[in-house]
Amino acid sequence: REQRSRMPIYPGLERYRLLEKMGDGAFSNVYKAINVVTGEKVAIKVVRKRELNNAQRSNILKEVRIMRQLKHKSIVALKSFSESDDYYYLVLELMEGGELFHQIVRLTYFSEQLSRHVIVQVAEGIRYLHEEVGVVHRDIKPENLLFEPIPFIPSKVPKPNLFDEPKEDEGEFIPGVGGGGIGRIKIADFGLSKIVWNEQTMTPCGTVGYTAPEIVKDERYSKSVDMWALGCVLYTMLCGFPPFYDESIRDLTEKVAKGSYSFLSPWWDNISDSSKDLITHLLTVDPEKRYTINQFFEHPWIKEQQIYPKSAI
Ligand code: ADP
Ligand code: MG
Image (tube, rainbow, N blue to C red):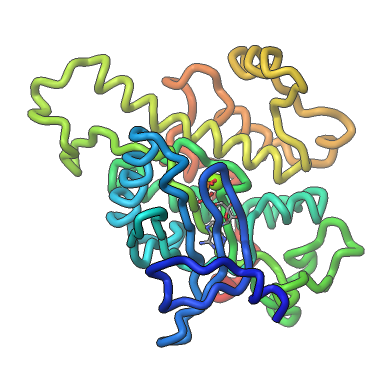
């Protein structure tokens, strides 16, 4: 009750009761809310218009325009969009589990099975974006990957179970979530996303026959930024820290530019060579040589048997 009384009131959102704050960004707050008419629970991203310049405003509208075109089980759905004088409201499908980021912090690192379970779902979302709609996300990271929790199903899940790393964590109750594992994962935050030229979708680039090679090339490269990020996410899940890190932004930038990362001992000692091989193909500096989303799905580490029953997801 205390929480509720501290919730702000927004004009135009009378149909919703805000329940709690789930996240915030530079210009926005995200709330868990309930539609008082239908009882449906949603997430609402409230963006403060006044703090945005024109470019940032049109960016939000682009985020909305792109999200409206998307419909996939690995993409957070935009349910509706509205605005008041001071705010934009993005009503989103609620992801009760929150950020994948917090689960990596909580569990220290993921088993190979759990990492595969997560990365395959993210990659299915990327395959949809790249191959079916011609959109690049450009901000794939554990903070923008949200999940639905699932209860343990011990009779169906062979050991090691969903939370097999570290062992003591088995069966722990996640506050506000109801205790459970990581179920469906979805990609959120299309704030940096972009429509790319695509033979199938014929996005608004005019007559394809007149498109310059550097544009076509540029846009082929732009998909590869998501594949790099996918490699960073996979690396991070498996060991618990990111492939590129430095206190100094200058040094970090240089490390990324050179692609200088390693599979540090002892953390990587017991992790399969096959997963390292896949990461190496994703964290390839030359975008022409980097794996595409279709090559990702052909890799043996991805094709290895998945121990979780499909019904669990
Ligand atoms: P920003 O552009 O500020 O990063 P995001 O769209 O990434 O905005 O939202 C910020 C945070 O709010 C997310 O990292 C997440 O913690 C939370 N959040 C966003 N959308 C949802 C959602 N649909 N369900 C649950 N939490 C969400
Ligand atoms: Mg974000």
